[in-house]
Amino acid sequence: MMKCVFLFPGQGSQYIGMGKALAESFPVAREVYETLDETLKQSLSKVMMEGPIEELTLTQNTQPILMAHSIAVFRVLEKDFNIKPSYLVSMAAGHSLGEYSALCASGVFDFVTTIKLLRIRGEAMQNAVPIGQGGMAAILNVTVEQAQNLCKQATQDHSIVSVANDNGASQVVISGHMDAIDRVMALAKETGVRRVIKLPVSAPFHSLLMKPAAQKMQEALEHVVPKQFTFPVIANITARPYDSSLSVKDSLVKQVTGSVRWAETMDYLLDQKVNCFVEVGAGKVLSKMMQRIAPDRKVYSVDTPIELEEVAKIFSDF
Image (cartoon, rainbow, N blue to C red; front, side, top):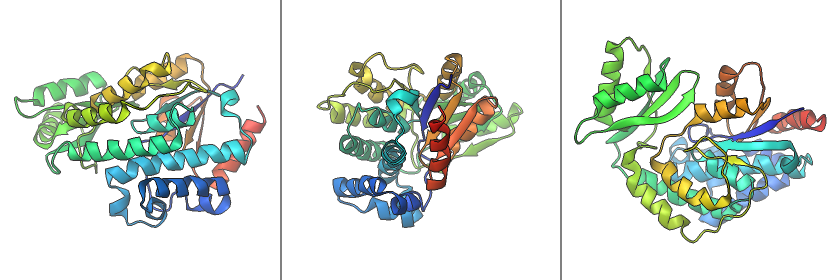
């Protein structure tokens, strides 16, 4: 029996031109992008399709754009290809902001609410730390324990760094003050770790430096009423499915400063005998990671009309 999980990408998956072919081919996708523009009173659909890259990569733009594109793909699967997620999808998981996409797809938040929450989240995360003071880096070919030890050694009284994402496949992302990240890079070389790559991000996401942003999200979520799940969603901070929608708001506040436990999430799904993973939205970051983690499982990505047709055919054979 096929057990399928939908994966929703996070920041870093964006590219100029995303959504263009989808909007040209499917009216429901155009409606999604139009709602995005109308809600934020800004032509983000033009930014995603035409650039400039500087506007696309602004955190407050990237987050609602990536979610909207994922939902556009999701709705095309539902309405144009007659895919029934509540029947076919065993669970869903999203990486960082992708968790919001998963919650929206599952019906916990409506689309307009999710747009507004991600605009607030993006602005709050960007403004939490002055530009240039914080950042992130990927450490390759290490365990999360090794990365944690390097961060511990590099942390000082007024300068911190910690593990932000455990992505699996020996890739760990750290986040914090830039001088602390530089110390991690130096220590890594001393201990034989060959690859530490600073990431092109403008803030230290998923670190304690994001506390002001967590407070903003607590205020933003205060009057939001989550609805019931149409299919289970896994929380980043626990690497387990939500027990109920009552715990969603608290989890999303903690997620701002907490580590994305992606490797544990994938391990949990593999333990549940999931044998089909579909990345829904821009790029192929999560699907490529999944292929490295579990090369024996079926892994797909749906971003373009051609990919939608291919995956829809697979689902029709269920």
